[in-house]
Image 1 (cartoon, rainbow, N blue to C red):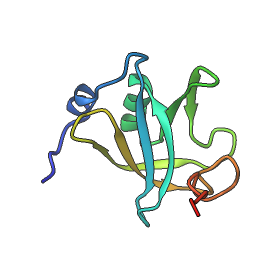
Image 2: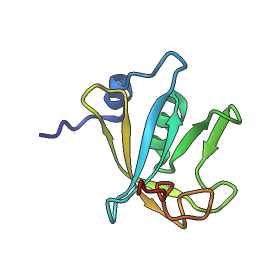
Image 3: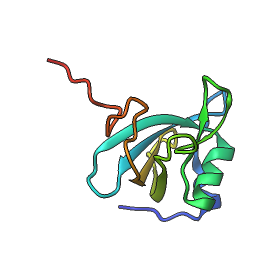
Image 4: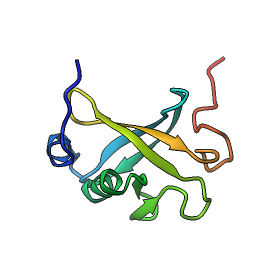
Length: 113
C-alpha cells in the first residue's frame, strides 16, 4: 500500500518535534544501503522537495546545510517517504561520493561483534 501525496500534503503530514525537527534517513536509491541520518526542519524539507537537492538542518551549527556544499558529495532526491506515524522521513537519494564526513560510503560502518 502506498499513498501518493503532493509536496504540500507530504509537508502537512510530517510531525515535527518540539524543536521543529524531524529525523531523516538517507538511503541509496540504487542499492538500498542506508547512508546516513540527519535532521530536517520544515524549511529544509520543503527546499529538498522543491529543488531535489537534499538539504538538512545542522544542530551543531544551527543553520541550514545543503549536503555537499563543502565536500561536493551531494544527494539528489529520487523519492521521499513518510513513516506511518509521520515522525520519520526516508529519503531515497542518488549519492555523489561518500555520504559520511569520515569518507566512508555510509555513516553506518561500525558493527556489533
